[in-house]
Length: 249
Image: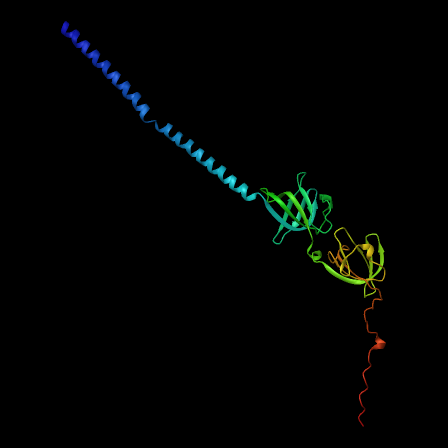
């Protein structure tokens, strides 16, 4: 009887030891090496983070490339706040808004607004490109057109002086009314002068701001009078008739 009881006790202790060992081994294995599904999920999360980081970096680089761009060309169409301009290579759209700063670099130097722009104006827009390749202008500058960029020299006789205007008679007999401004430089002989020093019949040489502008940049008044000589134009009556050829006998 005692022998059987000892066998039962030994068997019970062996069973408990086996269960305890199995439980401890299972917990240790769970802590030491995750299951395959948990390991895959961890790798997926890490990959997502890496992709998101690279996408953010790429977006930042693209935004930098699209910022602070300049587009220059001639206006071909004005539609609301949008300007269609013709560049050297293609057509571009410049978008203006309430934050656009307008600047006039032409000879007029006026306070520029969108309503002052017109077709064929030469402009440059500075701003950022959007995904449609439109430039949203932070600043828009109107430039002098190519045909009016160079100054033009003139010469003639003063036949009228009124306020800030000089009327010159040219050698072609054409009369030209020119405007002086606060930026006009006057010289009378070797001395500095004013428009009040310009008198009727005096001769003057001047430089206009451009071929199309009436504004004078420089005026040199010759302190003597006289009469301007008109351009010589040969008349038909003044031409020399060819001598007749000798008649052969």
